[in-house]
Image 1: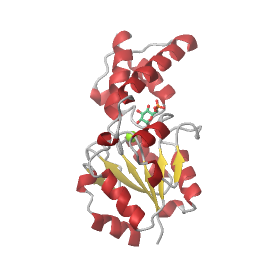
Image 2: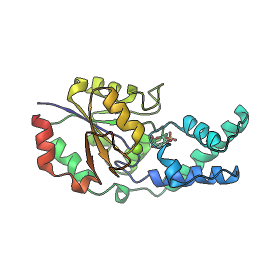
Image 3: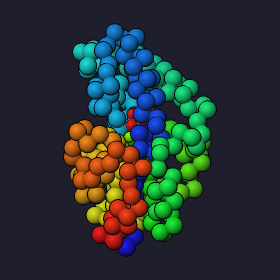
Length: 217
Ligand code: G6P
Ligand code: MG
């Protein structure tokens, strides 16, 4: 049967989660707010605007809209500066193999990302043609854990939520998939992605027999 395979972008397809972290850390440092990798887990999958609010909350700070807008702009410019030289080598290990396997088996593929920078990243890494549908931060109003982004993606593929499979590296994204009644596959540390139905450290550890099993299920 046809399933909808929905991929998150940052931290699942490309190793950009580290760039988001570096860019936020710079802002936090300027504001004198301690911001650790543990804090950063809360920001994964979360929109840019909401991420800044979380950082300000960490520092028990409030700020004017004007300041916030400036920091948001600064964060994105800094983040984009890391992407200038991005190419296929920044794809996470094993991702391309799985995308190709799904294509070869006629399975619909979608992107479900909170990022507003998703398209240029898919272009730079050369994998845009694999995607039958793209839903990103420009298309949704509700951030993960709200399932809007994944629900839209499944709808565009014409597949029922119960037949959708979501690959996610963030807690918020796993929760979004679960709320939508989709199959959640955590990519990363199991101790963090406890709520995922399946968990793999990365795509290298996903055997194609597992994908075949999911397709038949
Ligand atoms: C992804 C990342 C988040 C990021 C969000 C918005 O979900 O995991 O860290 O904040 O996208 O991305 P953007 O590129 O629009 O700032
Ligand atoms: Mg992610």
